[in-house]
Length: 212
Image 1 (spheres, rainbow, N blue to C red):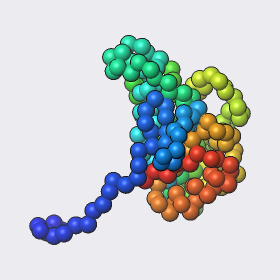
Image 2 (image 1 turned 60 degrees about the vertical axis):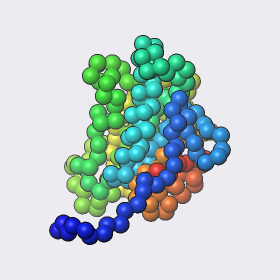
Image 3 (image 1 turned 30 degrees about the horizontal axis):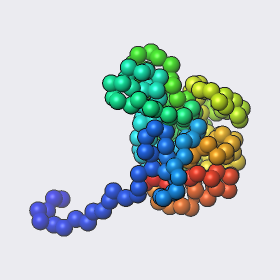
Image 4 (image 1 turned 90 degrees about the vertical axis):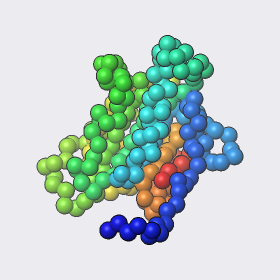
């Protein structure tokens, strides 16, 4: 019920800028930025939104790097974005909440029937105990670790499983925790601090950036 004159508590936005364009991420404030080859997004539910925003910025930079006309039109002459792939682990309670692969792909390239410039590899985890087994599609494992290092890997993949997030799932689905891999974790605060960040660090990932 709307009551005119009633006080409402509000706060935010919180956090800090983490993507500075030109492929650069700031993992910790005041420390040198890094230019990763792989960007991991580990998200819970609708908390994936900030990760998608970064994905769209990177896709736009990749288009400008590939198309000099667009780069000149937007005065982006020295684009050095080096991200070859986004690897996404998305947790949801229900199968219906898993976003399709088409949602992640660059919409402008799809409209022009062009090949994706940044590979998208999505692994969905359905956590609800009531999820029907027949509604779960068979999981498709990602390419072997290290495949495509040093060149653009454009294949896009989508898979889904029922269960929970574990260190074993992270190690199986994501690329090896190298220095050129950055991890964005998005979702509820407890999901980030109690689950996502500890598991990634236990798996060996060094560059983990919380987003909420």
